[in-house]
Amino acid sequence: MEEEQVVKQKPDIKNWIIIGLVTALLLLGGYEAYNYYTQNLPSEENTSTTTTLKTVGTATTAATQITPVFSDGITWISPVKLSDLGLFKILSSSTQNVTKSLIVETSYYKVGTKLNGDEIILAQVAPDGMGIVYDFQRFIKSSEKYALVTQNSDGIDKYDSKTLGTFTIDTTTKFDSIMPDTIISKGDTKLTKQGHIGISETRFVTTSESVIATTSWGKLYRGVMYSTALKGDNIKVGSYYIKLADSTLTLYSIKPTNISDDGVFSGVTWATTVGSTAKFSPMRTSGCGSVLSAFPMVANETAYNSKKQAEDTSTHKYKIYSTSSKDNELITLGYGIYNPDGTASSGATARKSIDDYWSNLGTITWTDDYGTTVIYNNQAYEPLAECGKPVIYLYPEKTTAVSVKVGAKVTKSEPVYNNGWEATADPDGKLVVGQKTFDSLFWEGIGIGEYPTITTGSIVANSDVKNTITNQLSYIGLNTKETDDFLDFWMPKMPSTHYVRLSWLQNSEMDKLAPLTISPTPTSVIRVFLDFEGLNTITNLPVQKLIPMKRTGFTVVEWGGLLK
Image: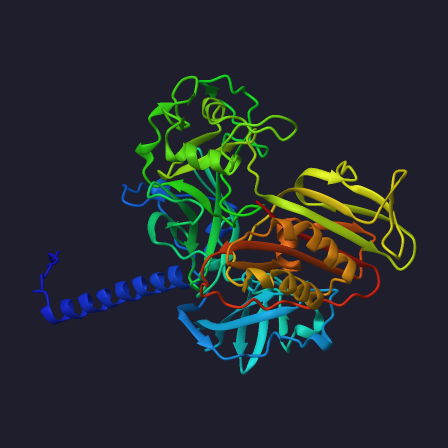
């Protein structure tokens, strides 16, 4: 039997080179396909409403790796300002309908493109008011036609139909990369999505900003800005926000996880007799409500955390402090907001001394898990800046039982508020509540919502204040009695400076600051609120565009002002 022979051939070098090149090309193609997939297809990371962050600069483990969220086929670009596209219209006063919001300003930007060439358009729309509270409306432009992407927009239901241009509605498309989580948690700190600001807005301009964490939708920033109300290098106003792919900012409010909605800390043993049920609120930075997402921030933490005033039963983990002395700018600031006169008093509106304020934790600080120190006020020492004497008039077309509620912490009212008013209203404005007759409802207190940053107004000589207010209220739509009532209350409170700034909040701002709930629903609502300031020199302030309002059907009128 013949033996088989095994012949070993020498390897062909050319063949191996070809095989190597093919393998490399296949690997490269696979890598590019994977890279495209991760860069362009929606991620399932966005299905949750809560995300966990990693702190910038620390080691990242597999459990905390942040996976970016991308939108299918979208290339986001630096915003390109566009001319008026006509998607939203500004109406003349003769065509206005006050049953829904009007529009006073709209800016358009191209912010992205799709693979098929369609464009992503952002419209920043300012409803009636001072032109500083924007709605975001996002569109897909295809073949010169526009479709509103409702899942990434604030909606158009509140606008009067006459203000709307020509476009279709797209309810199915969703851009995941600009839909960040509602809640961001880290340790004992919870950030909650509160609002947004747009391209080229200036109300949150910061003197500095820093990246404090990364998220699946972009970097989380801490912005720091000076405030005229919070002077000194150690105390500044701050805000948290994510810069999204289309260059807009999503703002987040901040709170400890161990504080209830009404301000009671749990798991804390106070080092004073303040009591376990003491209530605390973040120091308000402006007006008679909150400022969207903003909070007072102690830039120099060591200037105040010299005396531990609160401690967890085991670990002191909540980092709540007060100052070791009342002679400190933090206490001076807090007490000055609580009692501008600076002296103790007695009676129904008694104001405690600064010693009492300091020893009973009138002001404390809490340091969050990002290293930001936030100022809190004891609610027992409420500040004097309130929504001052808003007065509500009701004019139904026939005698009607009317229910009225206001979204605010009401501190004074006439008649007694009792979680709302139940009144019988006549067409001439006469109101019967219980067995008593009134010509209006009045309240004072703290609004539950956002107090806008003042960016427009009128600066007038002191001698012209009364005439200017009279003319502006008449233009907005108040009648002679309502205007006279306003002047009777507010003129004695005007400053004696050479000039006075007059800025008005109207329906849009007031509906956010202290929303009214009225049943039956009125046909027309006119809300005006005066923010004023004494000035000794004329400053460069853009003139405010006031919105005239028509009175038709069941009409409700409310006026008020910032009581300082």
